[in-house]
Image 1 (cartoon, rainbow, N blue to C red):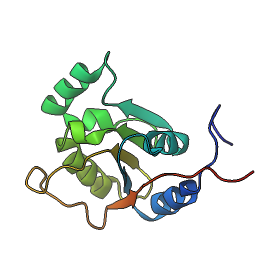
Image 2 (spheres, rainbow, N blue to C red; image 1 turned 60 degrees about the vertical axis):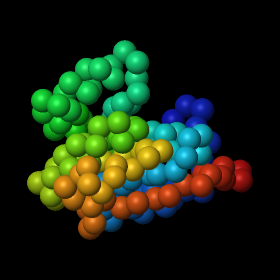
Image 3 (cartoon, rainbow, N blue to C red; image 1 turned 90 degrees about the vertical axis):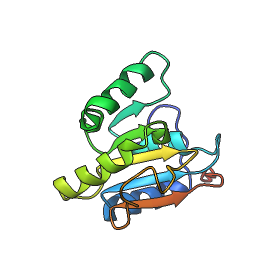
Length: 138
């Protein structure tokens, strides 16, 4: 059942498939393409890294103990994850530790540079690139 106000999109099925086969899914693409709306629909808990009331606290947590931001019902959405590149490695580590699919959804209009993270995410973090997430016909 769709969350209030959400209109089904063609990429919902792609996200569901990726969540069933990978520990985490990165939805990447430019701003205003439907990444967060699509991810939010599939998630059961959320961290909005750009929330003005909480972003400073989130950044402090990332610097002290990034795993704190990964606690919550799964799949857990980390929106705009590029704001804290260390989360990429924390997600990869947590996926390995837990050992089951569909744990995290990451969104970002930018992906951490190769020299910023310790691991590419290969085999653990599936990628979905959204040019534009079209609404389904009803």
